[in-house]
Image 1 (cartoon, one colour):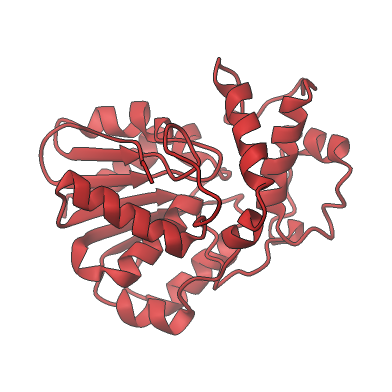
Image 2: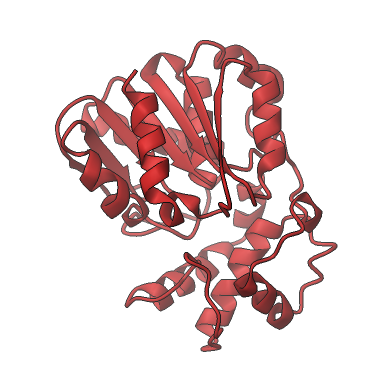
Length: 275
């Protein structure tokens, strides 16, 4: 399995893990470049994303924690600060549970932890942006009953993109937005999610609550979640399991606040990892 990765900068190691239907480019301009003067930043593409190879299986957060370990070993990183957004936060969490000695700090940004939040409903955060309302109208999905709204929303947006249907409204950050690679990324995501068993793997539970609490008790943890996030049940559960964790709620932040609120989030991250 070939995994594409890159490094920029010098100093203590910071490793960034992106979410589903994204790539390491998610972190490059707003995080790796500004931080490269003080840290060696490592970015990589999850399997089946960006320039990493796809496989028929191995897409659970637990399996991809092994991919992360392989990247760190290849890069010669024994211990690092880990930063993960969305599904990437789940991968980082699973890695930290298995290898707490290799993690100097862990920052999870707007992650749905499957073991702690098996369902993700519209009712978890009834607010819908103008873009989400338009996607909901065009998708034909009953969003009030959908139990995995985040995953289905990504799929719905990708299908609209690949069908050539243009949505006139945009959020500050939207999946498969503008740019030359947007259509290619949408097609790749549709192809990946249609592979037999992949959807089920993405929803696998991973480490249970007791294991998370015991294995991460001494790991420095920062939880950053958006005020408008449907992942807040995971945040509250992690707070309960790991009371030493620092928590930051981004005012007005949706799921993609690491980009829409990049300056303030990066400043909070810098303050955390610098300790």
